[in-house]
Length: 406
Image (tube, rainbow, N blue to C red; front, side, top):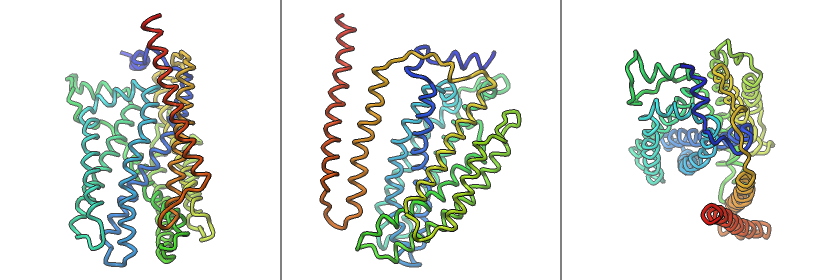
């Protein structure tokens, strides 16, 4: 049995509504924002726990713990929501691989949902318990949540990595010729890759703290000493974090299959260079540097990482004759236009309004009164939602009438 033929046969016979490279680009782009909140959540949660146990060292640690507990709470919600898009784009062009990997580790794929729910509930418990004068045993819930979050990351890593090894699927499905349909094993884990991606949580919370200090600098109720404490801590974490991340990244780079050419691929070394550049920059960062620039630099690193993941995937699947550019294309302009209008109009305008409102209101002490530009943006957001709903319903009703009565 030729596994390449099987994978190509498993493709959706209906094809795709636009060129596959378009979905590939969208998958890379949307994964950047998903993994950014994964890293922020993991880093904020770990630092919140550390600060929780250092409350006796000063009030700043207690305040920081409570703040980062909220950050991690919101971060889990956002990483889940933002993870939907890259998953859907993956299923469009890599459905055979993703489906096979999930079936081979079915119990873990389903268990991911339950462990994430339990972890989130534990973190909420810690969130409600983490206040001034909180008892130390409340930290137990946080440790359980963090452990489950790391487990969920490992599950996602294994499912993604197994999808790159189609030549091993039959050995996992029927080891020794005996069929195993239990789905109870994680068959392949590439530890340097997993450790590297998880290690980026450390610099992520570091650059966040730098932005955090800058964001609240205009608030009179946030004393400058606390902001300086947060910024200095963020700079140290970012510096050490990018340095620590370099080690597993180099290991991951050097264990790439020699036949694939990935070991010397320029994108992989561009990622190494980006980490090194961020390390040097964070070490030399001055108070005059705008607090949001390190965040943009961190997103740049994640953009290179997202591209590198796709380069690795393409290289692993190429020997089996799987090429997304050969996917059957049946251009569907109405659905494509509806998608991008939703992405830009609803996502950009409505999402932009919420982000602007949150950003502006958070920098004001007390009651916030929206500026004229923010009010107009809110009006436009409501208008675009009404238009989008009308077009969506009109489009659906038109198709239903045409198929049912014409």
